[in-house]
Amino acid sequence: MNEISTINSPITALQLRDNLHYLHPFTDYAELHAEGSRIQDHAEGVYIWDTDGRRIIDGLAGLGCVTLGYGRKELAEVAARQMQKLSYSQSFFKTSNEPAIQLAEKLVELTPKGLNHVFFTNSGSEANETCLKLVHRYWNLAGKPDKRVIIARAQAYHGSTIATTSLSGNPVFYTSGGGMPISGIERIEAPYWYLNGAGETPEEFGLTAARWLEDKILELGAENVAAFFAEPFQGAGGAILPPDTYWPEIQRICRKYDVLLVIDEVVSGFGRTGKWFGCETFGIEAPDLMAIAKGITSSYFPMSATMVSDRIASLLIEKGGEFYHGFTNSGHPVGAAVALENIRIMEREQVVENAAELGKHFGEHVASLADHPLVGNVRSCGLFAGIQLVADKDKRVLFDEALRVGDHCSTEALHRGLALRAIGDTMTLMPPLIITRGQIDEVFAMTRDALDATARAFKAR
Ligand code: PLP
Image: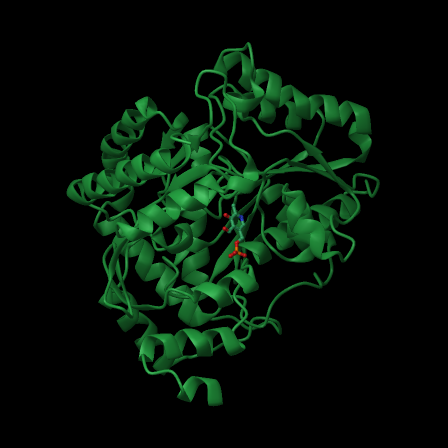
């Protein structure tokens, strides 16, 4: 603690204390220690104030999770009430609680038909890990234990446990070792028309990309393939929106070869696409399993869930015996009470309908960036956007990764008071769904400014 006492500024002291003991997720520690973290102090609506008094408009809803924005008193009050009534209830030994029962009913009502059962978890990673265990349990119970291989996609993101990192499609994440990716996971390319679809219209390319799944199943033998794991659109992997033809063809292929369809709605769920779930937006009709998290509580409490179809649940219930899986905080009564209130507010304030309406205005702004000299491709859906930066617009040439152009752009945005995320050189936006038209205008004025400054720094070279 000696170093800290020599620092005069309270903010710098806090940064130093942060460096000394706190290992942040997904962080280059040497860089963080050199620069110090931004320390957030308080937040309201779509705005966050750092400890240095700077106001940031949160173009990212935290990590795509603060759907209702910050500082909703109703959610804090519900949590406080539930904590006083029943602060915890274990759910392992034939025990339950009313908020969790009610939430399960509500989630069954909101999610696609056929998903009539809920397994509660605490993070997106846990929800996906639960999907994975259920896939294997299902095929064992169904008498087809050879159906073991999971097919996932390049640039997917499904979480950061060893299994969900392995499902994710960014090889850099495997570098910590531990045998990642674990065996039994195969991969196909992402339906990324802009970079992978040379010579085809988006519609043609959607079919081509879906048929990569069929090719992979045929290569492996359908009798060995357990499931296809995918996000409706790929978020953390680079804002990849599939062409309209992609999902109908994927579903046809899964049905034809009896391959389970596992949908990761961790980021696309709870209104992000302008519908309750990405499944509705992209025409995904009957997933076998679905992971949900983030917007389920607007991240006022860590909670997530795996939605389970009748097909899987009935076998589990009738023939499964004990299912050896779960978490201490599964079905937490406080999380469930917060989720129920979060959904009540979303329904009362028509947050999803508003997101769809505002999404048009947001989408026009996104489209207007296509003329920017640094921008090769723009895409948006509801209140989610990807802006691909390129070195050469005409030839679709990307920047050298080492230049970290995207990081430069997000720093420029932050200087202007906007949280904008760089995934490589794709800039992403996913603000709270309660953002107003005026605030959307503010976000895009800052985005364009940040792009201009980045273009001056790189294109002008
Ligand atoms: N799946 C998707 C699509 C995600 O975007 C994320 C997180 O961003 C996860 C899973 C992992 O969720 P968590 O960080 O809550 O474990």
